[in-house]
Image 1 (tube, rainbow, N blue to C red):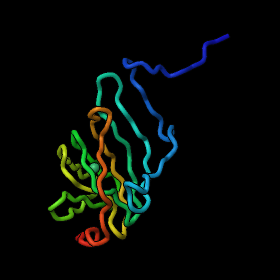
Image 2 (cartoon, rainbow, N blue to C red):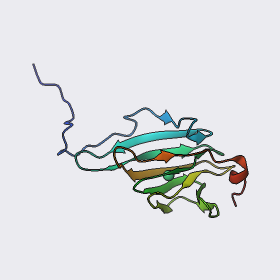
Image 3 (cartoon, rainbow, N blue to C red):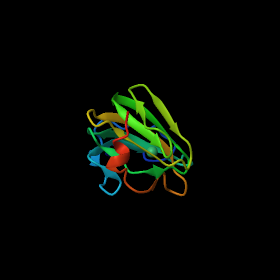
Length: 146
Ligand code: MN
C-alpha cells in the first residue's frame, strides 16, 4: 500500500499554504469594533518568530487600541484605511502603503466609515504573544478621522 501524500511539517521544508487552505475567522468582538475577517494566517517554524495574516475590515470596522511587543508591519492591499498612534492624528492608508508600528506603541487600525480595507499584518512573537489588547476605540475618537 502506497504511503499517504502528506506535506512535511518539520522546520526544514518550505511550506506552500494554498489560498483558502484555512477557513476565514472573524476578529473577536472584545478586540474589534464591527466586522473584521482574518485569512491566510501564518507563523514561522523553528527559531522564527514571525507571524501574521490578512485582515479585511468592513466599513466602520477597526481594531481596539493595542500594542505589539516587537512591532508590526502593515501592507495595505485594498480599500481605504486608517491608522492612529495614541496622541497623534489619524492617518489615511491606501493600497501599496507600508506601515511600521514600533514596539510598544499604542495604536489602532481599520477601515474608514465608508470604505472597507484589507491589509497584510506581520508581527514577531515575544514569549508566544504578538499583541496586547487594550480598550476599544470610542466613536468620538473614530469620528476624528480626516
Ligand atoms: Mn496593530
